[in-house]
Amino acid sequence: MNGKQVYIVHGYMASVKDHWFEWIKTELEKEGIPVHILAMPDSGKPQPEAWINHLKENVKITGETYFVGHSLGCISLLLYLNRYKLKTSGMILVAGFLEQLKDIPELDSFLEEQISTTALIQNVPKRLVIAAIDDDVVPFELTKKQAIALDAPLVAIPNGGHFLGRDGYSDFPELLKELKTMYS
Image (cartoon, rainbow, N blue to C red; front, side, top):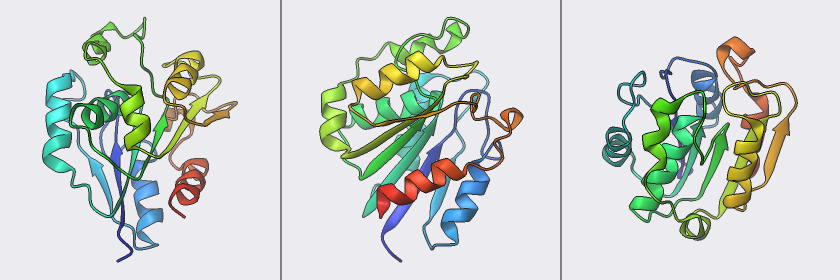
């Protein structure tokens, strides 16, 4: 056991079986890295308290712990790490946001709690944000603003959509490469 572990936090309307989650778990486990894909509660009608509590109850930060958040999973992860002032080795946020999505007002409640990006920068030394320029769910500019707020490098992918299965993302080699670089 090398002490590394990865948690994946899916987004709105998703499950642990969707998109690229199981693929990345399989790839990392080939290297002996435990991966936990968290089944976030009621992803069709998500509530911030339920999601933050789910993270609190199911995450055990030990050794080198890394997180991958996707879409709503990003803001949920940030809320969790910020609220409990947790330190972790690193995180990659995929198609995340820190502002309201005009087409999905049902997620606005996730943006009510103040997040200290300064504390997150101090507590999470390795940070990376991945965005698609053609994202039709979370506009590229919002993910770019998240990267700037977190002082995180931004990987811009021209044609990734929202990194969903329907966008051709049943695997995600770019993310795997970035994650391996982060923990190497």
